[in-house]
Image (cartoon, rainbow, N blue to C red; front, side):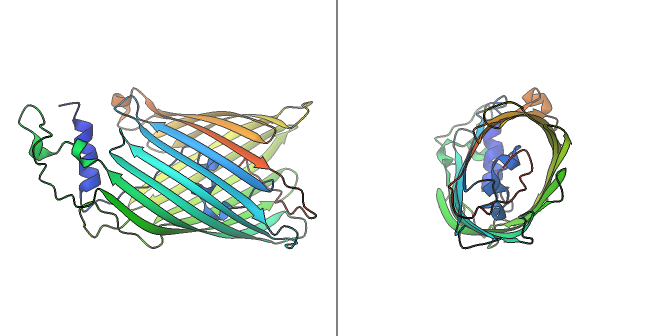
Length: 339
């Protein structure tokens, strides 16, 4: 019975006509800029940026959930835009629940425009949009349902009693976001953003029901404070709301810029708390514009006894490249952990 309990749980969530799905999330939300906010497209220190992040969750409970996102964004028209920035990008994300019974894959194109509010490139106001195509698939033959329970075991060869008409569903979607960046002085800078996902509220149901994917709203903010020579404190947070589900994740990273290195080398550690869910520790290193980050979730929710405190781990990599042009209109602000 214990073996099939997770399967029943997944089936009830996936197939219930009155329950809407919740979006994927990353503990290192700042390490996946184009899933954090469409307006972050083109908002980087260089000309282009490539990022990838992988999350593995609940390995101690059952077959782990695996989530991946990879993105690329680049600035365009740098020679023509004096104080402004225009960026375009692409994003692919995939999520597998358990052993792949429920799989969601999305491909997105994004664009953003950042208006320079001063000639020194210290204040920017940006707006961005994403257009997405998503495919969800379900291996429902491998799920166990109440109608298949014999009293002592499950017989998957019996009819499950469900009218599953579409093992695969596809839909188009749209997201949008706002972003404000300010470098106040050599000590303090700030980035704040707001984004809305699933603007068209697409239908997603394997039973042919009129079930819509609810809007998701996100607010994020990050400070960068130079606390001492070569040492930065970078507190940030994200708040998300979707279909009565809320997430608050707040904490800080601490970055040390190693002096004397031939190229800029940064070591970082950090800690966050996702309220009611998990404590998060992070560590990372940047060298030659390549930043590697690792995070580990320590479960603090009601699932703690089943997980033995183990929640998830994440790995991310970001590379920021520079293509020299006549006019480099790079925003000065990059709150750490660096995006």
